[in-house]
Image 1: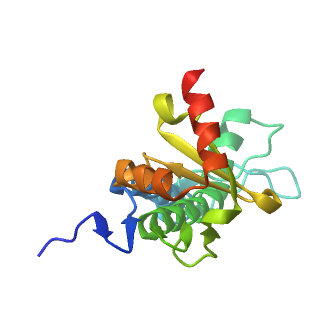
Image 2: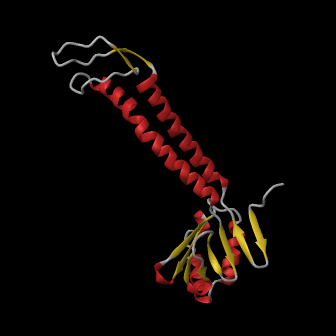
Image 3: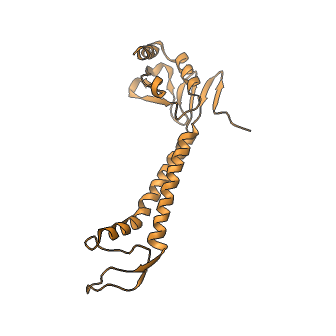
Length: 192
């Protein structure tokens, strides 16, 4: 049984999240996490060579250390220090960054907009009543398929066809329910 990406009923329209953005963010998250794991393996687990750092007496240490890239001061060799620092600090940066991007992917997959006779809004947030809409900014509707609903109190709601499925039905529902003063701004923007 498949689930419809856009649900229309006499009481309203629901536009669900597009999977394209979620897939792209998931790919980026996977790459960041895998690179962090690879750096962690090379920096901490792989069989290393001999330590080239110097002890307090200034003599090199000959004990084997874990990791492919042993620590070397920047003053000795910049390339060796860059190898060490990327493998030592890379996992600390890349893995948390990958988890943040993965969280954004999950968030983008779960968002949907519901419009009904009362108003419009994302699920889980406060709806904007139709009477509160002061203007519909359609300046990017034709080129980028972005519609901005400007409301009293400085609030705005941005609807993007890239992030939502059923965008055309949602825009036609908005045009049929928005106040006449807000529709006049759409007509003015379309003429430009």
